[in-house]
Length: 552
RNA sequence: GCGCCCGUAGCUCAAUGGAUAGAGCAACUGGUUUCUACCCAGUAGGUUGGGGGUUCGAAUCCCUCCGGGCGCGCCA
Image 1 (cartoon, rainbow, N blue to C red):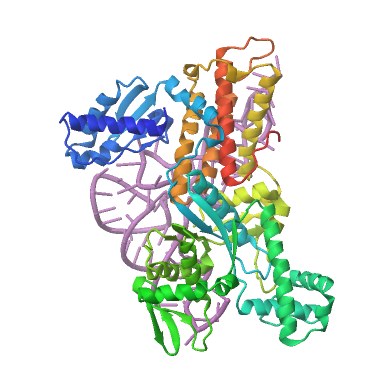
Image 2: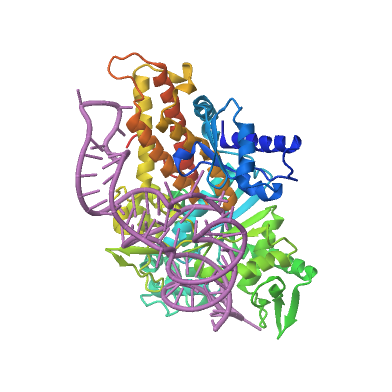
């Protein structure tokens, strides 16, 4: 019996009361069934009586009592009670709860997946760093979170495209080229340029491949170094993201947006929608029609297109490519763009409530030796994605970045992460997986093929078995809510709770027979439970993009 | 000045308007002749920044004040 199944049972109980005329509610909303925080309150609890009390014109506790009467005859329910202001607490018979283990083992890697977003095509754009330097710690957070979000959305059935927008157009590219060219000539980069040590490396690489560039001067020299440096830096970003297990489906070049005529087409569409006007020799988009602070310039008085013009065209281009929802994961330093981007969607004739979503991620701070690390791109002392991975590894880096909601600022203590200690819960979760794997290996060594034997779910009646089963049953709901709320951290938090439940079970319940003891049905039942738990941990870690090791 | 985000245990952080606000780390006390102790059991730690409001019920929603971060360009 799953929480979803139980919710249907409660809905049926409500409908039965209404149909028999004992209660009058028009259009009762579906019940929500949750696991209570306090285990003494049973396996599941629902607040449906309190929610519907007003519509029914009854006291919450009276309505709850009527529902209790309806529910307690169900063969799958062991006990129903009314508590507090009107909660209905439900305990399942152990066999009904334990069927979950069989369900999970049979569904295998599909357990937790659903089809509730199956009609939706979603573009998830994240990182979108300039190709003028290495990816820093902030980008690393978006890499981990964006990829995990994409995985969670896919698990909910959505068609997802991971997209990286390459800002390869504009004056910062020229600054980039001038900086490399200057260093190649043995000079310092210009004040407005780029100063990190990687510029020196890029200059050396460019010269190694193209020694003839050294003789170029002026704009030709800038362009030559710019293009060669761009190719090298983009390749570096791509390879480090590959290492980080974040694989983009589309790397979309801003230049290509212009070359393909998408910018012109976008402008035409916006004109047709009637939100474009001219003032002071410039062309504007009236984003204030849709809540933006001020209107935005598309074409400057000198005829140059703005960066914002690319943004508008890019959004329209995404919609033309068939995406129902465009998600932009932006850093807090770009939150000023939210208003104008949403307005772009509206100006293009879309619904800014549904077609565009812009979660804002707060920045990542760091402690090293207990002192905040000051990061400055100009000074070139940034901490890069590679640095973090070198320090703690891909699993710990990804996990520690996605286990927090993105809208909360995050402080990473590098010294703690470096210790590879339990301060990083990823080891706690991975260890549970490795521990179960070991038990299953030992079972195999004893010649026990539990899947070939009869599973007697009613034997899993120990309190800690019940709690573990309850946690396992929650997984599909957790994945679904993580997808709907765009909050992949829920999966990580859930895994930690699941791992705790497993360790407690393991501590109290012997799985394999000791010594020469015969194999009993309880051993078989517990092996089913172990296999189910391992499957859910593996599925959850996969949604995080973190490895599930068989040995540690 | 205006706008957005944040403020929860000593530290890092959870909690989809629900019952006694939870974990991990740090501190203290215990537990393994047995399947992986990277584990488990327990103690201690709170005016959820302050104040007001909404309601059966608020860390959560509204108002206000305080504190912190970020952003407010015909730059990209």
